[in-house]
Length: 67
Image 1 (cartoon, rainbow, N blue to C red):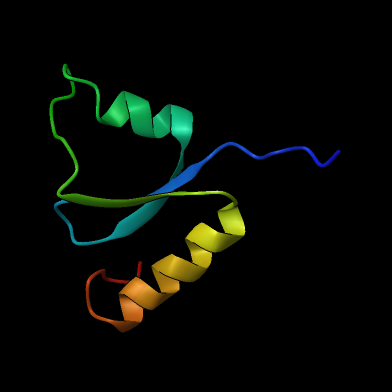
Image 2: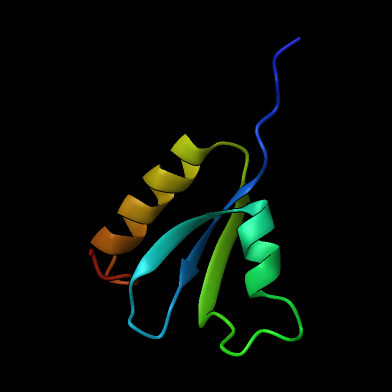
């Protein structure tokens, strides 16, 4: 039986850069007490590879800035 990875998210910050986050970091960021919630997010993605591929597409589409 394959081991299931935890979900991954893409988060767009005020700087227009998109970062990959695992589910634990994402839940901390989107917590009610968070000082600066993300502008936009995409996901969850089943694997980190899927999230990376989507982030590349978002950069190409002009929705995110590369670092």
